[in-house]
Length: 230
Image 1 (tube, rainbow, N blue to C red):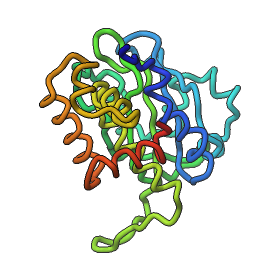
Image 2: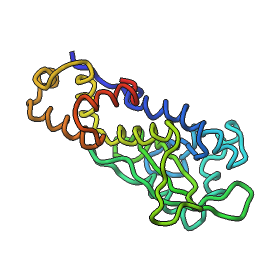
Image 3: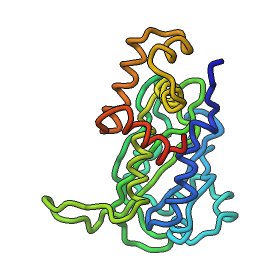
Image 4: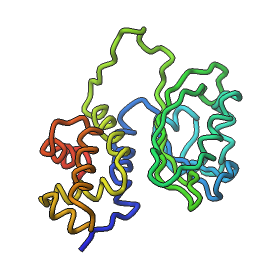
């Protein structure tokens, strides 16, 4: 019987990351959610990590009632349009829903802005393809190394962040195929289960190996079990 992945199951690696990594690194993490498609005035922040709360000098309970006003307090006026556009973007079925951008932010109540690199991942969309829920990580790059210098992750959590980003690029079908691979099924068995051709299964397998930047299926399985909780 074909296993169907619920939204909660598909988002599990992201939410686990939010609860673990988000609280251990000096990076702003938050989840934005809209109640009306394309209407930024209905945007509210449902979850933030402690670093973000310290940045905006607010508690979780205070944040709930602020809506988009919190962004007007910390985002540079010229960058607000970029933020609004990201919430109004339409994502066709099968399109990539992960992207990065830079934005200027300042700690609540201060006057000096800093440059942040924002990695955004759309968790849910409305029926029209517009953003319903988005997970965002913003890291301060104001004093990044000079060109030619390489930043090398020093913790396992940073490696997990990269792994999560890889997983977020997998399509829903690829995740289904991966689950069956981890369960020990070969390409023929998976093809029969999903009612597709063996060649289609092989294409999904090859695509995931390329995205994960691993050498073979065994390495992909190891990553799925270690990093994504399969």
